[in-house]
Length: 182
Image 1 (tube, rainbow, N blue to C red):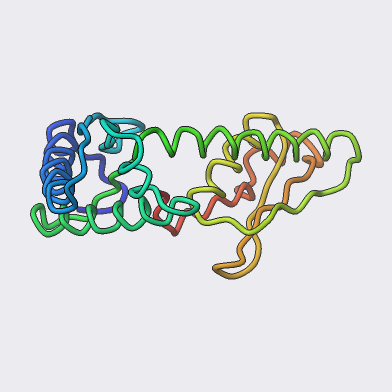
Image 2: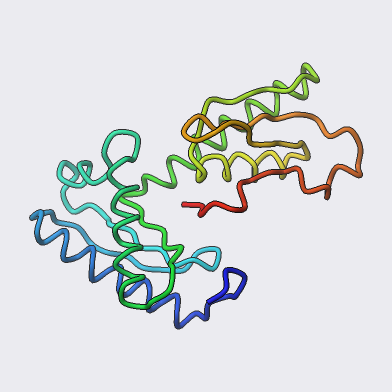
């Protein structure tokens, strides 16, 4: 399937079902209690593990989300193995991604305020592609411009004022279109 092709709701639901089965198996192996919730958000299947027991489930998030990121990659591979197609599935554990998005939104809004106040560009700390995408989206919503710079793992976002209204569609809101956004 070409990257530009939209998947049907049935295909997205199938991916979520496969992912849920895979994650339920992992929870059983680890002897963790949790409910699995499935859905579709922004044309992407989503699966969330919701805590029954607050202590165990935190182990599935890990430090700075490293474990949930690894779970997402493994689950995407499991879905790809069954469907034969790459998945852009999102895996969340106990609302971690929602909290992370809000924190990133706050960071982006602080940068927007600083740029508007000083007129000078603001560089943010290095971020992964998911984090950069959230920041780029917020900056664009606020009418400013952003661009990613550097090489992984030190790729970062710079936020700056638009020079003119013509900047709105010049393609420089670089949100790493060539990468898979988590």
